[in-house]
Structures are given as structure tokens and as C-alpha cells.
Amino acid sequence: MIDDKEFLAFINDKTLDGSLEENLSRIIDEELEKSEEEMDTELIEYCLDKLNELEVTTHDTEEKKGNGDSNDKRVKIKIKKIIAIAAIIAVFLVGTLSASALVFEVNLFDGIVELYNDYIRINFDKTDDNSESYELIDTELAKELAKNGFDEILLPEALFNGEYAITSVEYERVEFISSTNIQIKFKDKPVSIYISKYDMEEIVPDVEFLNVTSEIEKIEIDNITVFCFMQNKEASINYRDGLSLYTIQIPLELNDAVEFAKTIK
View 1 (tube, rainbow, N blue to C red):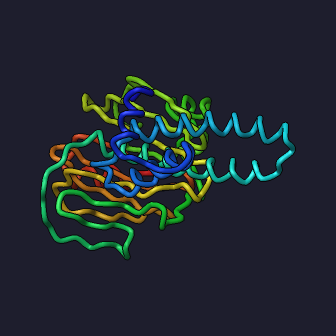
View 2 (cartoon, one colour):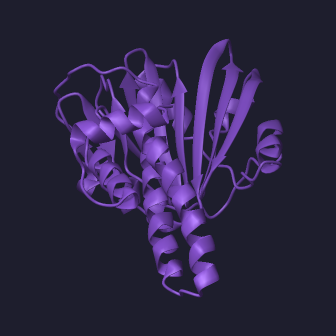
View 3 (tube, helix red, strand yellow):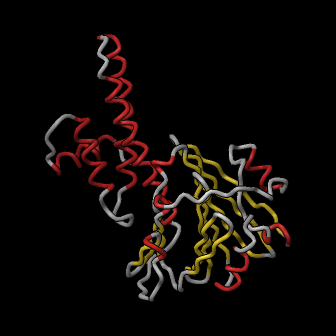
């Protein structure tokens, strides 16, 4: 995380005009317009922290003055924070992968998937997939997740049919977003499961995936659309259920990963 001295040097280099709040908001907007590879998430987090401090100070001052306009200002700052935090999480998902250039033909699935030279973007914000049932809530993993707010879980049944062991489960809560990073040993294969759960529809993001080395397979499972593809030697399985986004990374060939994904329920 950058410190105040580094930020002041950054401000001086950019020679920004305006109030501190305006400058912080402008910096966040500029960073959000960049690609995930170029976005400076540490700078965004610093600006969010400072905006939060200003929000508290302004609220206390305006409350003493009886100025009703402070509510609108806090709402605007809150929305900016939500958008920025969603972008940071999207970058985190991409950051677990490395980039390589590959050009191949792919069905763009009605604009939900966008293809670029070295990555794809899945526009989960343009979908409204929502499962009607959850059949694996009695599993050890589902019970663990339910204790931490992930009570409706949609995972491949095949994961629980073989020998598996939960290696670790980490949770994180930032404003309006809960996430979990699950590490599993499945038939001696390391499996990573990332789930991000958003508090509102408006902040469900699109997500970019780098180093895609195969065609993209699309699977329809009841009301859920699942996208499978290879990233080097690992398969990536991705889908949305309501306000939750799932990414499963497993060392399988694409055909095997597709069959694995078909058991999602």
C-alpha cells in the first residue's frame, strides 16, 4: 500500500487542480478506465481510504451544520467505492494467471464473451443466471461455507464423488462484497475454487481471463451457463449464480473439465 508521502509526490507530478475529494475521485476514475493489466489497485485502495476519511469528516461537520446535502455526497462516494472495489476483485482474479498471446476462433455467445489477442472477457454483468435448486448443501464444504454467509452453493457433484479433502478456506469481506478462496485436494489434484458474492445487482462485474489456450466450451445446466477453457495446463470453469460468481481451476484436459462441469448442481 502506498503512503501519504508517495501519494503527495504522485499528486505533484500530475499537477491536479481542485479539492482533495475531486482529485481523489478523478484519480479513481482514471484508473478504472485502464485495462486490468495497467490498473494500479494500490492507488485505488489508497484513494478509497482517503475518500472514506473525508466522508466521515464531512458527515460530522455537515451534521453539526444541519446541511441535508451531505447525504447525497455520501451516496455518491459510496457508489464510487462499490465500483472501485468490484474492479479490484476482478483484477485479483486475473492476477492469479499469467499472460500469453493466442489468436483462435470462438463463438462470442451473443456478446457475453469478448475475445482479444491475449485474453477473454466474460460479461457476467449482462447475464441474470439463477439456479432454482441447490442439491449439495449437505456436503462438508457446503456446511463450512454456509457458516460464513455462502448458504446457496452451486458446485460440481463430481468433486464430492471421489476422494477429496479441504486444504484451506479463506474468507474476505469488503464493503458490499464477500469472497472466499477454497483449496481442495481432489484425487491428488489441487483444485482452487473462488467465489465472489455481491450485495447488489448493479456491482456484479465483467471478468477478464488471461492466458487462454483453447477454444471456449459453453454448457447450459438448467438456468446456469458455464464457460470452460484451458489456461496452460489447467482448466478453468466459470459461471454466475444470482449475485455470486464462480471460478474453478483444476488440472484436467478440456473434455474432462467439461464433463466435470456438467455435474454442477
